[in-house]
Length: 284
Length: 284
Image (cartoon, rainbow over all chains, first blue to last red; front, side):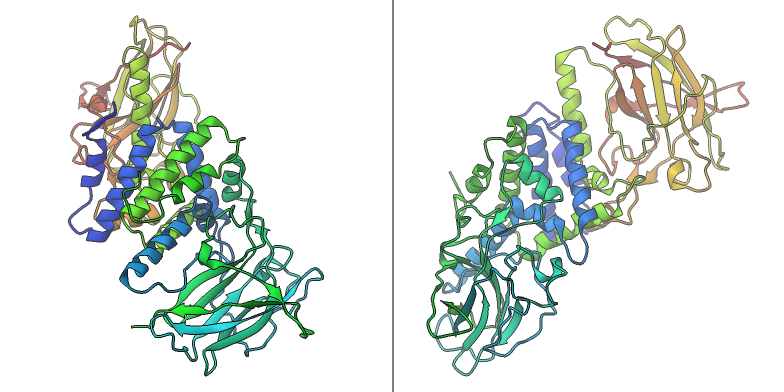
């Protein structure tokens, strides 16, 4: 079996150390993880110094993480892992039924305690001087029957033009650029927001160091985060005009999630308009 | 190429994001790491919740780590990674020349500031009531010529009978059960120590949680850590009588590192004796 010149029994020995009380799924995951980590080390003849640099990066990620920041998640994001896990989840859901709206990663800036706002509200409470106002609206419907879904929750969050979400920026009031909306009797939701702008992921920690070492930029294309809560679905929508669209630092863009902002006439509150319908799988 | 049903271009896309300034070795390591991590996720259809549990474990490891504790290292140890990297290093060294004394992992309890002691000293400054005293001695020699190596440093450290190293235990004086020794004109070193006893690795963090989930015990077989500093070599020697010898929680035991403590007569300081010669590669 072994095609390398190292101890051919080492990896099986580690795997077989798992005891009989290990759950079947954990045994499967740990077996796969141990095999891949060991193969990686052998194939690349990993040195003690290189391994220890990796340990330092992992410890550093934990030390930077707190209630407002999840650096371990960001380290996974820059090597595409969160987007890949999302794709796996979506592919399996797609195989099981008609295709709902594509999913995208949650990212580290979601806040579970975001308040509800009335349809038509403006989530841009702290207005940036260089912001372009947009009116976003659409319908939430059953992916199979196309019937409108009434009282479905649509939750959105976006960064301001300085690239910061409100919890990263003392200049923004709490819950700025966030809101939850309930669909009306026709399944409609509508609100005012900013045209999204690209921003860098935080690059002062191990994820930023990894990007630097890999000669990569930290920018994410302009996007709005959305969670639709009927049978909840997390996604992001991306502005077609953004230059980072093919070059996302966390690999989350899918063709079906790219949208067009169009000019909006006769509305003093917004010069742009975005129509975005959501197809959901009815909850079981 | 792709034998799975997920996006066949995703992993190449992440790898090709690396820019031209990436160093060749880092490009090799990141390419291998990304391929293995992605293959692991696809082969096991990793869910978002499972991935997030992994992120929490990694962040927890960093948050528990400080100057006295390296939990990221311990997480690697329980899946055998430090021992594997050590084996890779030793195998490559062995292929390049005659076999020196086998190596073993450094572990997280080494202290760089350990003081020199005179040959014949007793490193058991804080004496545990249940400790068995042993006299350890041997010669350090050139692996090729067998000539004695004079003024080579032999550094040792061991846990006390309660399973704790001195920096983990307020009841032990500083540098208890540690010492550096210089070989004499015949390449000899000698000192008094404890017969080592098995102990559990710290299991109040993510490494301990992983062991519990894998239904594994946290015990390491009784051992003494050694660094020989000519061209430095890090090793551990294990007591043949220990019940964890075939069952080390960090997979560091090698046959050539197992030693026999024998009865010692007519020495009021120790009832046991251990002779241990070290073969070193002359420094270049």
